[in-house]
Image (cartoon, rainbow, N blue to C red; front, side):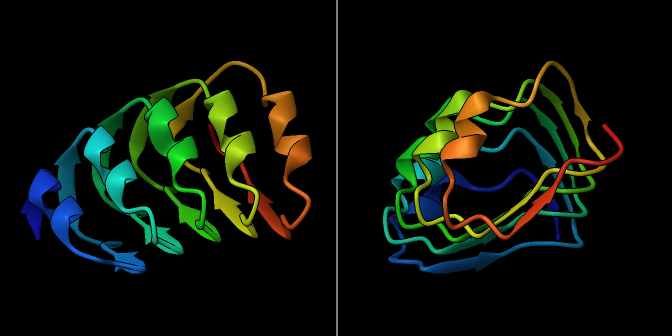
Length: 118
């Protein structure tokens, strides 16, 4: 699969969205945060670019966020600290910079944190 992630995907009642290992490109659409029931989001191993949308914190049911091996840049948004159910955060092999937000320390269920190769 290639091209951008269609914003229309947010109209589906998804709990699991696995789009890893494709050739998806462009930014992560901020509309993806309208998937309020989403538990697993895997967009790893694509050609996604731009920042991680700060609206990501609106995915309050999210347990796994996998964004590794893309071309994401900018900082890790502090809003990840709002993901109170998060168990796994994979952001490795991107072009992220800045500091690790202190809000990551609020993720009491977090079992796996991957930030290597940024």
